[in-house]
Amino acid sequence: MPGKHLTQPRDVCACVWCLAVFGFAGAIRVWASDADSKSQSPKFLGSGSCSSSSCHAGAETNRNQYLVWSTRDFHHLRPYATLETARSERIAEVLRIDNPVQNQRCTVCHAPFHTVPAGQLRQEARISEGVSCESCHGPAGNWLRPHTRPDWSHEDRVHAGMRDLRNLYVRANACVACHQNVDSDVQQAGHPELIFELDGQAVSQPRHWRRSMDKPGPQIWLVGQAVALREMSWQLAREKSPNLKLEARAAGLFWLVQAAGNAEGKWPQIEPNAFAPSADQLEKVHRWSDQFAKQMSEIRWSEELTRKCLASLADTGEAFGDTRICTQLHARRAERLVLALDRLVMGLGNAAADPALSRALDRLFDAAQALPDFDPNQFADNLKEFHTGVSRILDSR
Ligand code: HEC
Ligand code: HEC
Ligand code: HEC
Image (cartoon, rainbow, N blue to C red; front, side, top):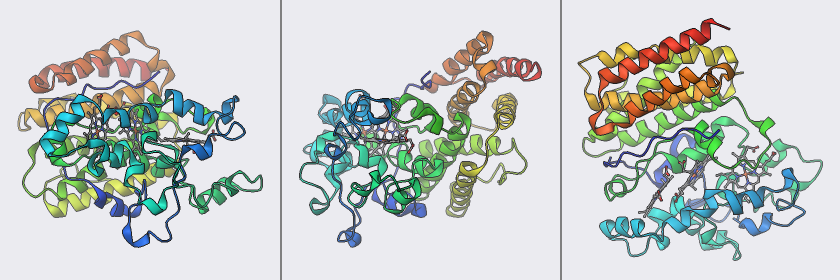
């Protein structure tokens, strides 16, 4: 079942993000655009190189990746086409961009081949492919031929430059690069606010890999949230003037991740009040969240951990009664919390199948979605009701 999504709040939020993200934490390199390394950088070959029927466009389940992507995955069907819509035209007008389809400020995420230097892009590769195989799996120039050798292991392919998407931390970094931060002026010009939640979004992407390869959903969720927090704290540290909306969004996410971290005493902890929009504190949050994400991607997740996270996050109702906290921050906490509860419930078979809990969760989503008129007390009541349902299920096993 696909993840629930919050409708994007229509109001704007300012952010700073862009190519600098690539140097960040040394991990995020969705596509090569580093001028210094141009000469050695591997080539992007385009999806045509993967599409022979004996390769990834075959009929069998394990050979049909090209067909799934080209016929069902919005990464091929939508991002490029979106840049040709009236909405993109309006955003472009505000930004004084002539043509979004030909502008790197948009194509960096919507049509990444456009940002690859000409010498690094095979002529047959098309910008209109949108987010193509190599946008996620890495440029194939150095591994296209040998990666099918029967004596090559996954590690050999990764060594040759294929991105190790089986590693959750690496996967989260690949997706978050396009799914959390947009530049402040792009946001203000009317771009939808992005909210990264790896588990729900991974479930929504039409699967072209074996289900057996996947780690448990709640683990994917937690790694994704920690990585999103790292990106947001990094972005906030680079804002030139106070940006209250971005601060509230980042603070809301910080609250969630540190509360989830409390579920297990052995995990790296951070003080609940560590978040503040000063350079020192943001640097601290940034380092902690990166380390936390890495560690969470490596642990052996158990159902017991899902229960602990669910129990601890469902028991946060009181926090929403704290009148010292502004409504906007409460709303941003609630926004991330409901997505978290959804993923944790989905990760527990008996909870996901419980109709009363499911109704309580729907009410929480409704309360969280009322963003401009968010009512913390109403949300706290709904959360208490949800908590009672969770306790009943966790006690009854
Ligand atoms: C190169 C940038 C890029 C990368 C990398 C990327 N995406 Fe996307 N993705 C996009 C863009 C752009 C859209 C929006 C398409 C549109 O509506 O125009 C999108 C849309 C989506 C959507 C549908 C909209 C939504 O938020 O529900 C999902 C789900 C999604 N991506 C999941 C993922 C996952 C999971 C990964 C990592 C495995 C990933 N994406 C990697 C650029 C990217
Ligand atoms: C950081 C990556 C990134 C950048 C840069 C970016 N976008 Fe997007 N854009 C996305 C993602 C991801 C979505 C999907 C949001 C969702 O559905 O949750 C999206 C959605 C959109 C949508 C809404 C699509 C729909 O039908 O709902 C429009 C319009 C759009 N982008 C236009 C632009 C334009 C124009 C630019 C350049 C000025 C731009 N984008 C730059 C990542 C990006
Ligand atoms: C939006 C990101 C994204 C795009 C675009 C994408 N993939 Fe993937 N792909 C993934 C993820 C995530 C996995 C799962 C992790 C893994 O098994 O490596 C995966 C897995 C795979 C696998 C391993 C399947 C298995 O069960 O072992 C193959 C092969 C593959 N992709 C080929 C392709 C091809 C070919 C294309 C283009 C036609 C493509 N991918 C486009 C993200 C993407």
